[in-house]
Length: 333
Image (tube, rainbow, N blue to C red; front, side, top):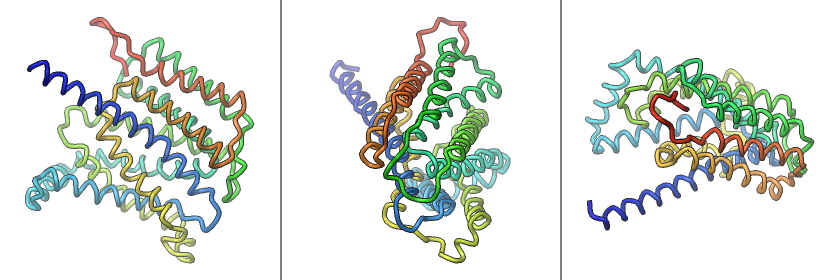
């Protein structure tokens, strides 16, 4: 490889890193803000369970299209790939259905959290998924954490506790009555489900060469019908009275699309991001969310909230920091 081509490759890698930083930051910040705004603005309120179902349906259709594209846009090859991966490997598909159901419950809980917590508190509290993922990885995968990572998890819990106990509020939020306890309970449960599903997924996918698009098709096989069932079991009366698409407008559709496609976009760029960049993107998203909340929701910061947020941001960087290790040291996550 010539020095010129090497420089071009390094420049391309740098561009992809910056692209992944912008994408990860934007997805983390805008999704939280849009979900909160959609759930607290004046006017007719959409039914959140229908939004979760539609996001799963959109994800399924998109991934089927991406699989078709990867199979040279041949219907025969596309169907053959689906048959080989899904129909002829039923046990593999059943295994994937476990995290599928868990993710569906998690997505419904995140709407509950977004309806009851101000967006800055929601964004910071949801970082507890780092803790739950670490705990499940230690217990289910036998991974080892460094002392600095254990310390970072303590900082994370302390920071979230400070944020939750701080007396901050959004003056400009409308919508139904809000309960901080309900919001925190929903966010904490979602963190536990996220940690379990992520580690379970990692455990069953080790050594697999199935594409991320095909995996999402497998996930949607259960989540789409289960999401529709959940909508009618939980909100059947409201749907019968007001209609399935009650309260939907352009902004709600934007939120649905972001929930569905944002995660797929992150899946594409995340492989170009190292742990430090991921932590930087997450921290930037928290800062952007806090600043945007001041202008959008008339959010009032307090010293305790700011200190707690700083602890959470510091813990994210410390957890992702991986010193160069010598052979024989335990594996880090």
